[in-house]
Amino acid sequence: MGIDDKLKNTAEDLSGKTKEHAGKATDDPELEAEGKGDQTKSDLKQAGEKVKDAFKH
Picture 1 (tube, rainbow, N blue to C red):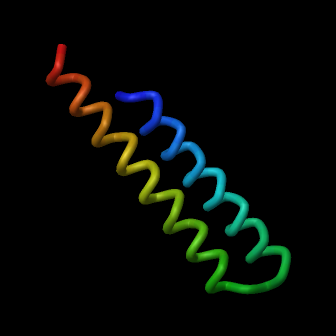
Picture 2: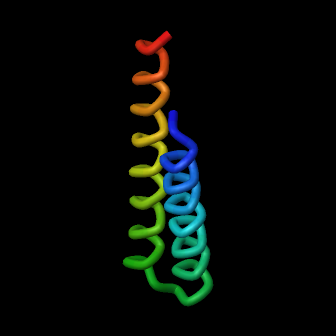
């Protein structure tokens, strides 16, 4: 997994967590759901990168 991909995925995960918490704090279910979605996308990307790495070795 490239360091750039790791950083992008981590940034997306942190952004998602921030959105989720902001949505909870402001009672905005759409923002909260968007944050959870961003986190899920990040997790799936990380998993895909790990699978790619497994096949490289």
